[in-house]
Amino acid sequence: PRVIYITRHGESEDNSAGRIGGDAGLSPDGERYARALARFIDRRRVEFSAEVDEQNHRMAQFMAGSGTASGNSSEPESESSHSSAHSTTDYASLLRRVKPDFEIWTSMLRRTMETVEHFDPQRYRIKNIRSLNEIYAGKCEGMTYDEIAAQFPDEFEARQLDKFYYRYPGIGGESYADVVLRLQQVIVELERIRHSVLLVTHRAMARTLLSYFMDIPTTHMPDMELPLGHVYSCEPRPFGNFLRVWRYDP
Ligand code: F6P
Image (cartoon, rainbow, N blue to C red; front, side, top):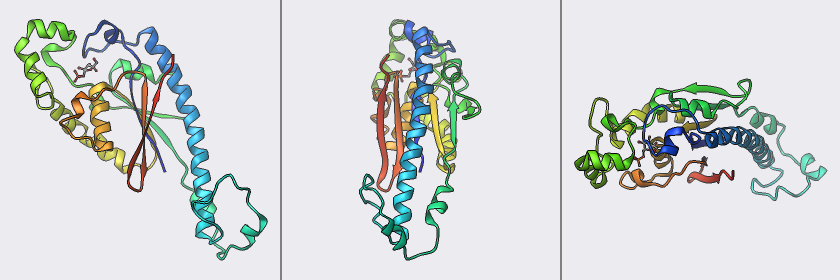
């Protein structure tokens, strides 16, 4: 059992000026979000660990034939439920061995690295991954959308017509299709590891990751509203991932 949390970085100085791309640091609001995020994840880790213990306890009872896996967790256990166990295997301790580890992955841009500065490095392994960097806007890096529309009207229109395949002009300019390819290795690694991860990344990246986990078609993905200050969590369940959304209340 594990959770994949996805969030955008805290507000950056470029966000507050309406500029795309770049490598700005956090604004004072972004810094407040960074502090709140560390407190929130600390708390969720404890809550999730308790949920997993509870689930494991019920599963162990079920496997030992002394209860139902879906039994009411609030009911107190009776002595007889233990003594009526058919098996001598200690399923509870077997299940408890799956100890949830926790990693934090950021991009290599300042705004995501600053967003995780308040996590205790003793308790969280932090990795900075270049493939999580924001979509690269080539010639349009550092511009506002209004400036792009005024200076490159054809480009602006082309992007509106086909946002998924539109590639920004200039060296290294990317499309959402490019970003999907760039994220493949990250997704393979996310699927491979068994523990929980918090991904602190950017708008286009968060759209791509969420659309992968929640099966959202690529035609809709580049227009998903994913404002700053939200944490999305995906929990693998038998029939797909279960999504929860938390909004930061400053
Ligand atoms: O404005 C923040 C930002 O992350 C930019 O750096 C990036 O170019 C943009 O969002 C991606 O969103 P969209 O694809 O809607 O322009």
